[in-house]
Amino acid sequence: MADDSKGTTAGSRRRRAGGSRGRRRKPPARRKGWRIAAWALAGLVLLGGGGLGFLYFKFNGNLTGVDINAALGKNRPQDVDNGSQDILVLGSDSRAGANAKYGTDEGSARSDTAMILHVYEGHKKASIVSIPRDTIVSRPECKTSAGRTTPAVKRAQFNEAYSIGGPACAVATVESMTGIRMDHFLEVDFAGFQKMIDKLGGVEVTTAKPIHDKWSHLDLAAGTHTLNGEKSLALVRTRKGVGDGSDLGRIKLQQTFIKALLDQIKSVGLFTSPTKLYGLADTATKAVTTDRELASLDKLMSFANGLKGIESNDMRMVTLPVTYDPRDPNRVVPLEAESAEVWNALRADREIPKSALKDGAGTKTDADNAVKQVSAGKSADGKKAS
Image 1: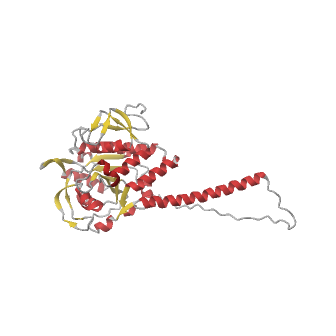
Image 2 (image 1 turned 30 degrees about the horizontal axis):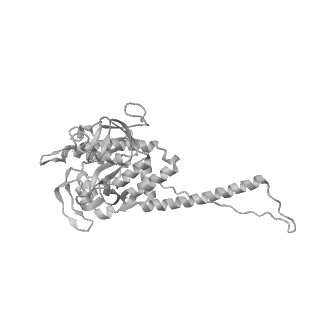
Image 3 (image 1 turned 60 degrees about the vertical axis):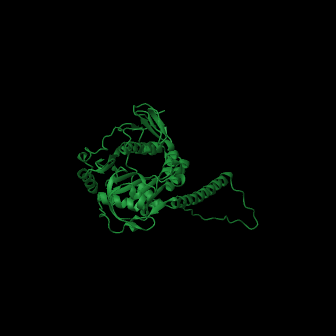
């Protein structure tokens, strides 16, 4: 929520009338000290106000926005005004710029992680639906970054929408498959994610078994760990070191990590540490790309303020009901009836029924409980984390 208050100072100088022939008496030490303190305080207020203004413009200038509404036009699902919000959250696997150390692309960037965040009316609880990146979906017609139009296709891998048409095509694909209008779009890239975790001081998790994944360079013994940015990124990207190596198992790791991250943000005392708050704000505003409606500091702060009452225990995280694709066992396809139950529930601002999830291949995986969040500095067995 934007802070519209303005620091103002008002005062007037009052001169003592002295006789033309007399000398001005020296003010008492106490009064002189009070005046020095008052002017020092005024100076701090002015400097502080100027500093806050500078920071506002600095952070505001860090933000990148995409005009989703202009790109998609009017051919979108109805905007249902029931007090809820739906946000498409993407993790980008672009290897451009600072992300180059994680490898090179075999083409354009793709959305490595995709989640639909549904905030219920009242903003006291939320549901997150993870969409496996290898899900085969119908992709609508999209425009490329070069301005060309790509035709709609019946069978396309979900994360290819982003590589073909960027955020607008990703949003269009999600809206096509869900029938739900996305109120906002939020993207975080690899390098930005890693830096944000480092600014927070790491995130604590407990691994039930050792995790060794040479592809993500993750090497963790069983036990409780404080993961820095690089190890956190490796954890949310690992597949080969947990379960059957599928994307469905990796999604479970991501969901657990996000809850641990929420707990960490609540516990680090950002507002009691200006240095930490500044560092995180500067890093976060550089790391995210949003829809144009969120691409200003006051609007982004207002949006974040609306979510501050949601604790990790108030957030239900599920995976889109899918089954393995009969035509390609390395891909998955949505279970039509069950997926419709999920989207209908969110559209009506209702809880996702358990019946919609029970047959999904991603509901229970052999990666379940491989990693557990640590709450209030304690490990999963109740002992203090080391």
